[in-house]
Image 1 (cartoon, protein in one colour):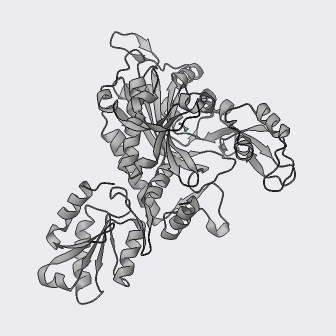
Image 2 (cartoon, helix red, strand yellow):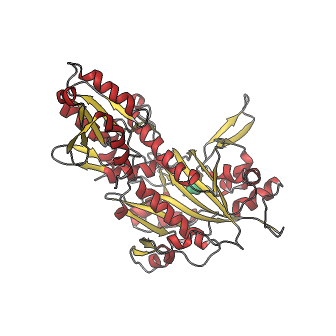
Image 3 (tube, helix red, strand yellow):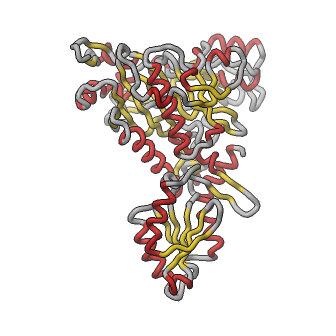
Length: 491
Ligand code: GLY
């Protein structure tokens, strides 16, 4: 499937569509519709439950989006958070210079200095793909959105380009609130903003997007992971930096063989395993997942090693849906230096240290994209989303077969009971076949229909989205039936 098919489908059924469509859209910005907002909230809820509520080591925060400008000086984003850009002298179109060189010449120049890329463009006479015009000089372009704060715009600040920094700046306070435990992690979900040069591929590269991030702090002198035995034997499709340098492809390997000796190695392996498990738990096809170590040139300025979880799209190939970066002591040291405040933790023997940090960072939209891509099914009869009940917009739809003869009253009673526990949808309008198709399209796993037999023996039909099979269940048993089937649902 190509990404455009999925984008068209998502707009049609109310998952996501370009913002301000009536004004022609706004590149890099999307809105979520009635179906999409439910899916998105569900994914975030499952993530929070998995990593905050079910992990003793992790607490959550919710930081501000417009942030003190010094945060971004200390973090290195003012200096380093840029892409390389070139603009056509004739038509004015702007391009990410490294992507252009890759597309036109097949040369990977990611992370190379602007001057070097400029030389390659001149030497090979790369022209504007749109109009054939001459390209201007390759320059750095900072991706942060600036904003003026206060009535006279006295302070220039930024919309956060990652949620991570709000975690780092709050480390001293949250460390105390967490009673100085180590290792420990802080999680945050929320919007982030990047002024991408060429947003594209539907929800894949956006200017406004959401992140789900954890900064997991540990003592480099006491870095054993108590869960290591549970994860060390786990296998994934893996690709190390060395394999890439030798021109090899991904292959099934132990996660433990993906990560070399480094402080926090066991935790890095743990986070890779947890990450892959999370994707699979929300319905991302495991056959389309691989874990790839970033090459040194690709890494962000703070990273001493990064592993990307990637998803294979038929048309876009392997693309990052989560990055797991080892940020060392970079961020806490920088904030200590710039703020003059202590970012140290204390060991039981009283000695002090700056914790190291591993950062698993998910894109919410990319997670959903991979999930929907994995769930989308189309055959000669219908289109349906084979989506997991825990992230489906509705778990159940309830219909009266016809909207007369007392059936709507019974159906409404059942619907009201179900919705106290599950997200439910009620519909009594139109042909029953069409009502089923509509629910199939948005991924509702179960449809309950009240028919004439219900009036006689109080049973209803429950239809399974994937098999389209129906069974009769007594109306008093319906909630227990759903509970059981949701619990046992497997991708
Ligand atoms: N915090 C990592 C990132 O936003 O890419």
